[in-house]
Length: 381
Image (cartoon, rainbow, N blue to C red; front, side, top):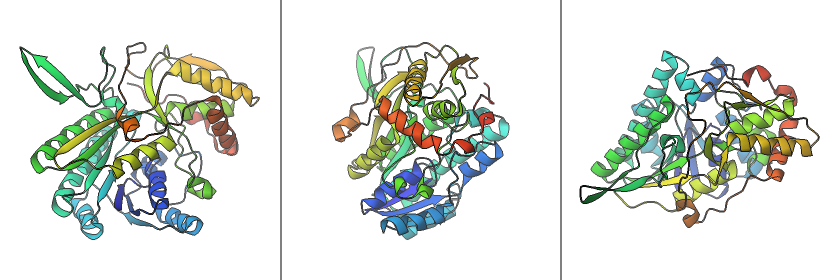
């Protein structure tokens, strides 16, 4: 299968490209290095220095014998994206090509405007390129569980059936984002649903929770193939941030009361989920929404788990509650459904002490790269 990965230089995009290529898919990746650029601008560089995308592809081919095609360009440029689709004629498209940080999107007007323009224009361009060049291909779009917010009812898997005044209908589940970034993801879903209805496109929207991890079978072939592991307050997810704090001897900074609950998954399971979605395309005119996570934890629970794993390795790990820089409920009801990917065959990797300890040991190899000034909150809303 010809699989086009947009945002293929990212934390998820690059491991996905290697994962699919290792399984003999014909893979092309596209990126314009936006995430690298704004990480430098905000002093939020990754823990491990990563080669550029073309170098990564060369290293991977030398290590695995598998080729990944690369194109450097901006997906907000429709002429460029249209030419990529015309050349490659993808049978599946994995769309990661968005500004991925909630704190960045709130940092200031310039960052907000960039997030809105980049994310929505890219999604619109992808939908139009599919219509023009590959109308039968299957779009696998990375959404986020953050679209749902924290409603005081159970979160269904994308859709909800409503009965009102004696009549019933099926709607996208009501969504209420907590950042501009998450709002663009909601608008993505609305755009996609419109074009699915109007043009009979095939789409899977993966509502993913925060991801943790820095190791995959392909990345472990060569140190230079590691994913972009961010641990800062802008691009780093909470688990990755806690793990680096533990190695650096810094307290784990829990925002507010720490009762915020979310659904998490291992990087290995992101690769599984995308593979499963690619391998089981939807019907024309179908928008399939899958909630992509394996376990739910509160921030307090995550801190306790990292502390325990750190102590098993002789690290002194303390926990500190700090003023919450975010406007969010710190105690709330949270019960999201997530059976769709399990039904497709997902075999979860759960977050036990050995998983966290292995990540800590890997991070210790790069202890000298840690800049603790990047970790504490620098953006507030």
